[in-house]
Image (cartoon, rainbow, N blue to C red; front, side, top):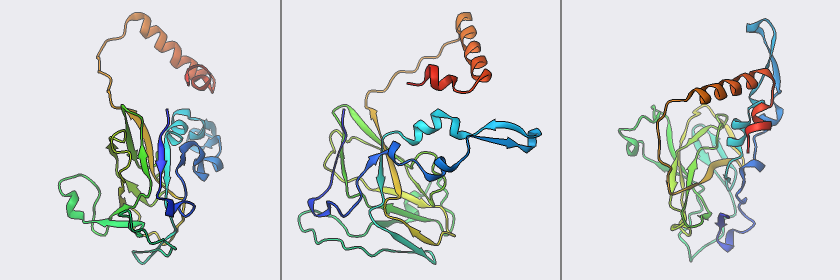
Length: 232
């Protein structure tokens, strides 16, 4: 199975390529410790999120779409300066960032407080999925450090593989000043099958209760049990 990311030939080498998300793990994950001393528990040593495989696997799932150029944020305004070529055979804007009117989100619980900007990241890559697969496009997983929140959407990319999908987002840090650098991940793209599994509701049998208890006791007894025995 392969996803195909295509760009216009005039943009080849100008914009950074999408990458597997596992190759774009955040710097803070590498820098954080694996254990800390919890003062609230009398100095007891605790494992950190760095030892949580489900969290790390979510960070590395699918493909990351990077910001195409530097964007400077100054006094609430966005600026960019890049050598975008003249393209006459495709409807591509040179503006890497657009805007949505807040009124377009009327009736939603999105945090559009006064001063919150509704923006749209321009995506210069088309994304094609194999037949029967869709693409979930969402904010980079567990990336609360980013000054924006990309909204989630589901695209039938097996049929829309040559269409451009742009990324609406909320600018959530009105105090941010500086440069959002080229290559910053702005959206995480996760393939999902169109056919969705049915949901069944059941009560545990006695054997299942016993097995579940044994799993929980093993998880508490030593680190790495999930990673070594269950993670695939």
